[in-house]
Image (cartoon, rainbow, N blue to C red; front, top):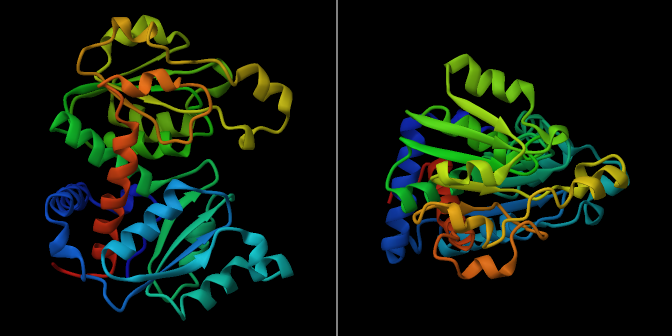
Length: 305
């Protein structure tokens, strides 16, 4: 039995295989329509979610399986004092596979020690979000046709952004990728991510506070929101929340084939006017997330199609 807690739980070969499966599902959905018939997915979300939870549920239903779970910790027995470990142990008696989101870093790993079913980390605090990373890799591959030889800019909240941490970690295993880290000083990429994913591998990266100055260099721009829920006081959040707003004017100097990504939800860092720009790919990301998670469910359940 395997779990997915961190994207590096998968080898590069396995990631490439999952991307290929996701793309085959996009092209031949009928082939996979009953692959999980008789199987159940539990979605245990101790933290709010729209895209990730519904994407998992949509993925399992599209594979012919069924779903159960909760979207609010207050509706579970944890509100009565039950430990997360006991909740997971209980649910793993009912479901074949579990997707879990939790505000505390490390909670999905702790859950995996008590589970009788595979655990998928659907986001743990500011730590990791491996299925969003898989979604991002599918999107980059679909848009660029490769996962090497490009420059990617990460912009916004790089300190608390678990999607950023996971994607930097994943891409660091591919060749000739240059990283441009764009953020306020207070929201810079954590030192441990730079040390383990970039510096230790001799990977080139640049840090800046100025998005416009580096815009012409970028092949991929990964925007993020400043996350109010990660701040200890509202004053800091209000001061930083509008640090980067990607207007059409700022895109004037960008490459014609720039890929603009965002894990969503957005607040005001990407105005709605940008949605119609052909370089905007964040709604494609949303769609790709379903197929990426379908591929992952099949792999962890060891189902061959």
